[in-house]
Length: 399
Image 1: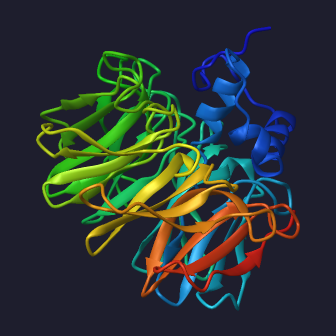
Image 2 (image 1 turned 30 degrees about the vertical axis):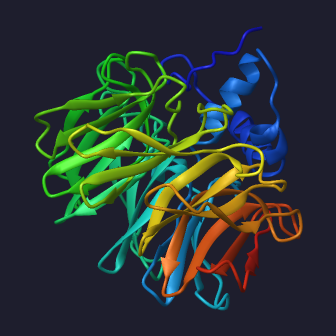
């Protein structure tokens, strides 16, 4: 039986709890299979790579606590929200996703706005297509503010951003063409509007999170465009003036799984595939769509399959790769002009492996999440911006 190599189609797939648990097992317990193994001409490999790479449970912080989600685990295996102090103490699960009507299997980034956290789940809600939720940082007052229903999005393997009390987000599926959309709504759940429905030509299956500057939103899609390798796009916050800034073609990268970072008048990001070694690239492009440039081709020594939104610090960019680097993924640094690539940390099976999502900067320390660890359910770590003082703060368990 041939497995479709494109992201799941909510019109023909109704995942059961058993299938969700099996997928979660493959994703979190055996990341070497899900992410690292290369099987030539295998649609199974393509399916797992494209879907699995979209599970980026990025962190949020108020500088005292770090807040995060787990896709799986907890009381019913539906995931949970946790908090932990920046020194690794005070770990607490503040919410279990037990009731499917409130959503389950959270993905993407948590966003802190005031004293509340906002996020999304890929399943659950009234139509089992996922929800947007909010919850106070002490774990009280959980509220579902949107049910995805297909028309307004479905199975959103993406993240939201918040500006001026408005949520902007991406749904990897759903919309008028079932190829995903860009949306906005107020933080109280009112005023939902679809800003852009993807149709293949203008992109297909958006990923990561949007970047915002003034009234302009910037993002990427995993598929679609002239070469079906993904696009970079921009659009106004009112839905006007859509522009395709770049069509990926393999040589310039392919299948960008993560959002971009705005650096002055440029956008910097990564692709999970493509480039000289087919292991992904780090690119820069003007916000107007000109001067596209590959700053780094990933490979064996430089790590492979970069993931997560880049972090800018002074004149350098920082990020992680899922694989490669003569290790189980790396943390790297690259100057903004593409020079002086440095490997700051190589992951192993003790301190974590195959990092996922984005680094988060607090003072002089980066925080992030990786697979592996003592119980093989993942780790939360921190490391100095100079690559020193790596510390594993938390080994996650099944519960």
